[in-house]
Length: 52
Image 1 (cartoon, rainbow, N blue to C red):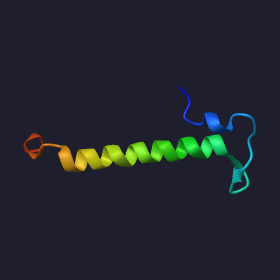
Image 2: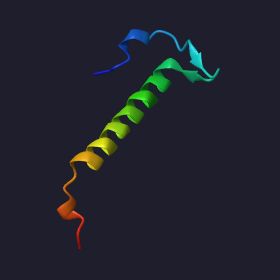
Image 3: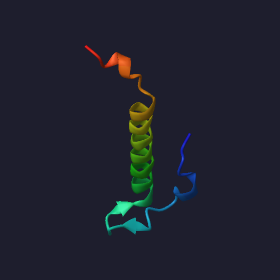
Image 4: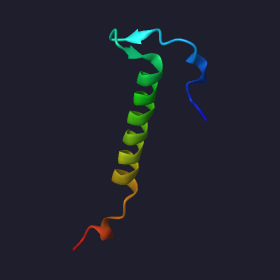
């Protein structure tokens, strides 16, 4: 399932003059997912697993 079904018919508007809207939307979703995963690991990872 596509998250950017709202803009499939054209590549405009462009971000910074060269990135199509679908590509920067996917970059935004990927960065948000990475940030959320980093936050989950930092806050929810058990400390006793890191002790040697």
